[in-house]
Structures are given as structure tokens and as C-alpha cells.
Amino acid sequence: MTTVSPKKGHDPARVNEISEKLMENPELASLIGELSTSTDNASDLVKGLLQASINAGLQAEMDAHLGYGHADRKAKARVETAQESNHRNGSYTKTVNSGYGALEVTMPRDRAGT
Image (cartoon, rainbow, N blue to C red; front, side, top):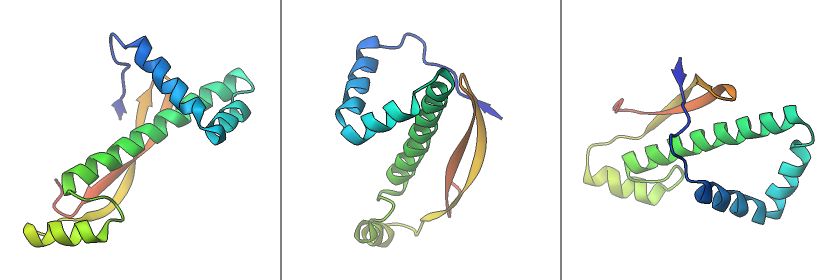
């Protein structure tokens, strides 16, 4: 099992900037208000945001690795004709420990196993 540790020396100004951007979206602000009615709910909310952020980051990393986005067929065709064919090959779940408890992270795979 993998453990995610908090970043040392975090930037409070950056955290505030991210918080403000999240709350600018009315749908997201409403959802956060709904889900954070108690301490347990607030902890689950942070855990859910962390899990969603990790999953989105892993997908973005796979996009960068392959050279095209998940549903971008034109870019995929362009990249695959220019180099050896490598593309997404499903995913698997992995449990990762965090300061908020265990998270289920979806790890994307590619055909070449890179």
C-alpha cells in the first residue's frame, strides 16, 4: 500500500487561491455547502476532493505521456502514425493511505506498460 504525505512548507496563499476558485463555481459551492454540514461530512468532503484530484492528475499524466487526451481521436491518430502504437489499456484500482484515511485511486495503464 502506498502512502501520500502532506507537502512540507505549503504555501497558504496558494491554498487560499485554490479555495476561492473552487467557491467561485456556484454548483461546486452549493455541493460543498451540502456536504459539509457536520465534521464527519467535512472530512469525507476533503477526502473525496483529494481522491478526485489524484485521479484527475493521473489521467493528465497519462495524457501527457501518450501525447493526446482521453477522447481526442484526431490527436491519437496523429501521434500513432508518427511513432510506435501505444494507447490506453484500461485501469486498476489501488488503495492509498492519506492523512484522511484510505483512498481508492484509479491507476491508468497503457499498452506498452510504460
